[in-house]
Amino acid sequence: MKTLTGVARVILVTAVVCLTAACSGGNNPKAVAENYAAAIIKGDYKAAFDYVYFGDDKEEAQQKKEQILALVEEKVKNGVPDKSRMEKFTIVEEQIDEENGTATMTAMVTYGNGETRTEKISLLKNDEGKWMIDNAK
Image 1 (cartoon, helix red, strand yellow):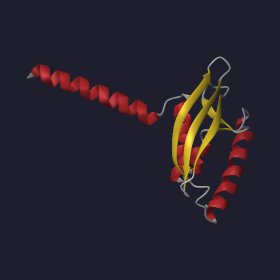
Image 2 (spheres, helix red, strand yellow; image 1 turned 180 degrees about the vertical axis):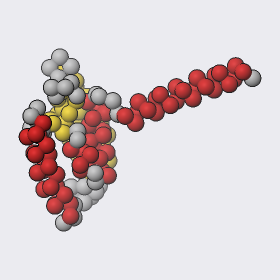
Image 3 (cartoon, helix red, strand yellow; image 1 turned 90 degrees about the horizontal axis):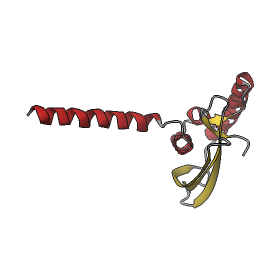
Image 4 (cartoon, helix red, strand yellow; image 1 turned 135 degrees about the vertical axis):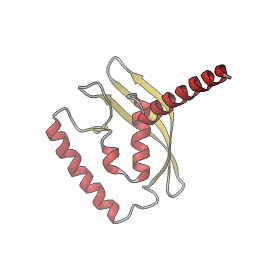
């Protein structure tokens, strides 16, 4: 009986560690792209923009982020057309260049009107080594 309890504990600890890692998303391009898309799908644009690179100057980046967020929230207030509303996001290809700190994710995106398109998302590592969506691309 004690062996079963020990095995059960190992399984439980392993499950908790795996779930914690999955929920945190990690610092890798795929997780960043998926977390960004999940926030967009939920309509949580503030959270989505936390994954976007607006520059190394933190004060200037924050100002840009707030300006764009205000524009997006204003447009959303007026209603997002079905053809623009992302409903599903699936990464189908990853190209990661660790040496240069860049990545491109190719995703199949389904929109509210049922249309499915292939979209590319460019990412970069910021000066702190954190993967971010490249705002310039």
